[in-house]
Image (cartoon, rainbow, N blue to C red):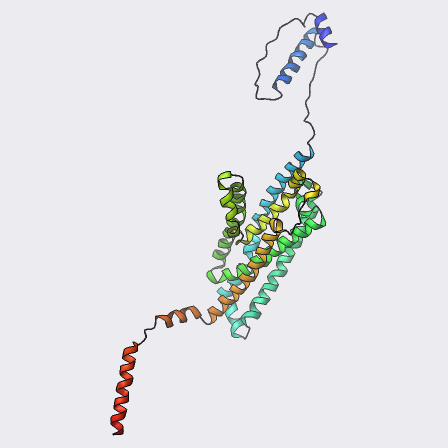
Length: 332
């Protein structure tokens, strides 16, 4: 009907030339709509106008899962930034007690190293539990605000439990790591800055580097061999666990609902969670060893004993023979 109306008005016989950018998807339809609008306005003396609109097709399930995975991966990486500060904060009160002499006064008063550090770890665990509960509460609330990002970490009871376990084991490793690190700093500010930088680089930076290297064909094999080295750092283990949780929706869309693996499998959350558990035990034992070594330095004493010169065996034998000869002479 529009073409017949334009032809009757004498406007449809015109030849139009349109130059457009072929890289723009909507350029040609927009130009055609503009041309027909101009012809219609001329034919009706401005009494009628033509408008065109374009709308995107709805996303497929796979596209929605991919978009959700990208948002969730970004959210999982961003979580590592505040937890770099959380993991480093526990070194500050330890260095303040050491700097003010409060720690030495407790030991002089009869507090043992085990009692001191166990009580310190219990207090730090209580503080970290408050942070953990607040984080889980925020994730639960975010399910109604940002469902694409929060679904990966709090979408179900199983996923929420895995998130809580990952954060809890990170605290289990980060608290004794801060305790062991306190022996190598003398100022609270320097210790705090150093641990923040350490957790940020080993968490945020190393997770991004691992993500990039895994997608490059020439570095994928070497990156896979470096995974045991990466897992020596608590912040990377937390980031690896969050990245695994974030990619479950994309994996579900690609391979189907019936091919999901157990969250605690070794290629899912099992490896980073086991590494965090082992690191917590190792750092705790290292803290006690450093404390006992500070009270009674074993390594300097052992090194001094090894450097102590020993008398030659021949000289020792000669001195024994001369002693025997002098004893025989005395007997005569």
